Length: 488
Image (tube, rainbow, N blue to C red; front, side):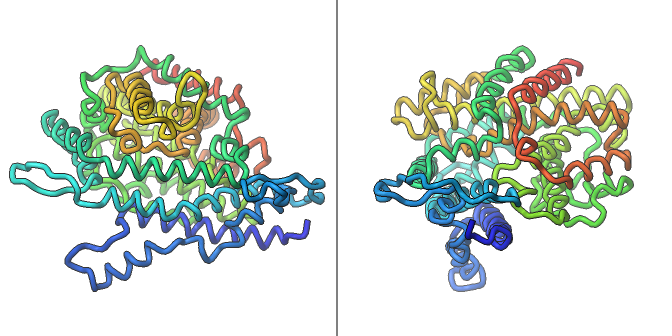
């Protein structure tokens, strides 16, 4: 193989970091500066956010590089996005070619659709909705979504839900265009590669089966709400309010694990943490910690980046779910939050109910992104308007007990391809938790030996098989997840 794989790996690592930072900044701050600072520093920062973060990394975000890595070259059908196979690529003793090809594929798609991501962020941040609060005010769809989740009253949530459903057309259109452009770019690159990269399971359809099984097996445990916004209100976990700090900060999370030396010597970047609306906010923060831990351990390994990290990383998703799920663990509620045994169990039950709704919504997202109907199909946003809305309402009603309006398809929840990795990670994390309890007791999260074991496992070289979940793995994890929920 003529490509210098190790050099390419270093460039992929730099490109992946640049993309992650740019996406986070664009999502949080939007592409335009405040009206009062059109000529100031915010304007310059906003202009920088419009720039494609992958333009400086063309070598690792180009179709030609992907075709070289996969042993293909453009043939007569190149103009149609087709590739002609050539002789098999030269032997690759490093084992880097295949994981690098996955990264180059992903980065190429992201470079192509960056303008579409900017369009979507602009729609989210534009003050395009009118609402009476009680004075008429203009708010962005992003603010309306946040206030829907933050409002403790059903009447308040209904107000923001109606405003979103009525006025989020620009967001829905931008989300649909992004999906269309991404799938068209994938078709031109090598359509068969997309599904295998986005779904870290073998076979990929196993994730869809796991989503269906999770919805079916957890349905008896779900408390149905009369409205979709009522269900989302329950998912916040306000009724599990005991023991949490008034402010959610990185220091609180660091103190939880300081004695175990879990993060010693690691760069843990949590980014901006969510506002503490309820138990689910702390679950999200701990999930972010788990993902950052996996990323940080991976950065300390001496091996190539592409062998330690995948574009849709199953290990990172498992660690996010493992630590995020602590908030529904009665032992954690007792030991970390200082609750008595009875209160700890009550709080764990209430939190588990809220997290179950989020998990069911992730399962619904997998169905909508990867299987839009009985015919198998594809992303639901690629369907016609009526079919899209009907299917969206059908699947969300099953997940929450009440349908989210079809007008919000692509708006709430975000129909992103990362849902498959998140769901698989949550399912496998249930078995990880059971293994940790059996090896290190119920308070494994306070055990230095458990911390050492987690770091050793995450720092070990990853085989191709360890980067993907088998159907048997998912079945075993789902069984453990259902048992854990039923035991509360």
